[in-house]
Amino acid sequence: MTPLLKRISETQRKQMAFCHSRLSVRLQMPFVTTLTFTSGDRHRLEDTVTEIKQSAEQKGVELKGPHPKQPQELRIPQSKSLGPDGGRFDSWTHTVYTRTIEIVGYEEFARDVTQRTFPNAIHVEAGVEQRTQVGSGS
Image (cartoon, rainbow, N blue to C red; front, side, top):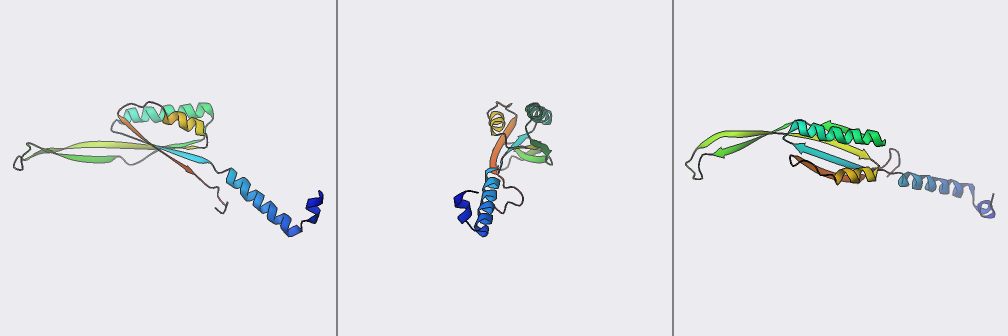
């Protein structure tokens, strides 16, 4: 035991150990990148998220998903003319499909995925958050 530690009381040693363990937990908080893909072309959407998932598996990246959401039916009214008396055609319907992928840690892989060029039919949104570990008290 070093001379400094001899002068520290047992209570102070426990407090230091507790602070050190909290610091270790804070340093281990992973960044989670959430990617949300939306498209009216379900097959192209599936191909895109499958390609990302396969790439993650090859590189040993922890990936959650793809998680499908309920398809959203959009109805767009169509006027027969620009005037108020023109009447309407049947509404045009469009289905939007959504898949969500979470990349836990692996910031370089997440950066590579977000910098890819995706087909025009696919819209991509990315969000990053730092998650705390369960029981970390933060």
